[in-house]
Length: 362
Image (cartoon, rainbow, N blue to C red):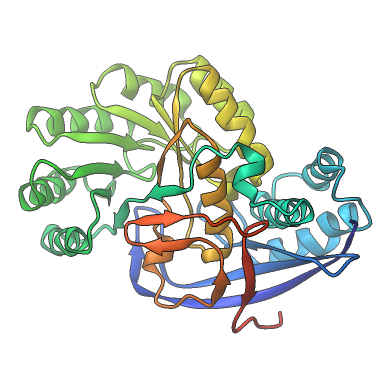
């Protein structure tokens, strides 16, 4: 089976409610879809959301990278030669992790369809069922409290609270939510690089002194401030997770060797797809560190790819794949099955995606 063509389409999906963090606001998912076709007519699917504030990738750069660099490097290659395909894909252009991820997952989709197996089984086959948390966008404390209660009413047991704009207000946000949801709900905080190291230490210690029982704090400092991350890690009791700091396997080695974090958040759009995500998970496992599988504002295409990876590996112990729940519509046919807050990958070949409604020409 050889890769014959790589087509690009666009999907537009409104969100139920604006998604707001310390870095950005999103009202609609306007993402690029990859449809990769093999010489026997089999199709594989991938997706890249433009997330310039985090990955640096925009619509134009995603389209350009795939059309001008990635697709020419892999068209004509045999899908069975997976390592060669991935080497050429990853070395076709510098950076551009989101377009690489979109093509990477389409290749993995074709590869596992070729062997007639669901992707998660070929990657490790650890489990089929996952439970996601739900992100609560950063807003005034009262609004976040109401959003948290609504999420608990839907059946969620873990909430990821966006913080990082105002440390004093963050205290009020988290306190209001903890008092509202009670002690049994897992609260995770994501500062999205919003604090300095000293501010993070002071704020997290206040959470601890107040007994707010935070499971972990994600990315408290700027992405490349590895020393600041370690200073936070070394001066609080709460677990610290790397997100924007960890784009590559090399980042994983450096952060874990420094003992700067307790947990890592793998996102396909940051690391360039499943191929590199597997390396990061393996490095983390070597260091005895657990992983979370996270996402951007993505449709069920790339979320299904992420779910298959998370289901495959034992040391991916947490998932944050709630974008599927934040979207107002689901145009993707097939893929994972959803029973909030649970996701299940299926035993259909590949990613199990059979089509996407409403695809638009670029």
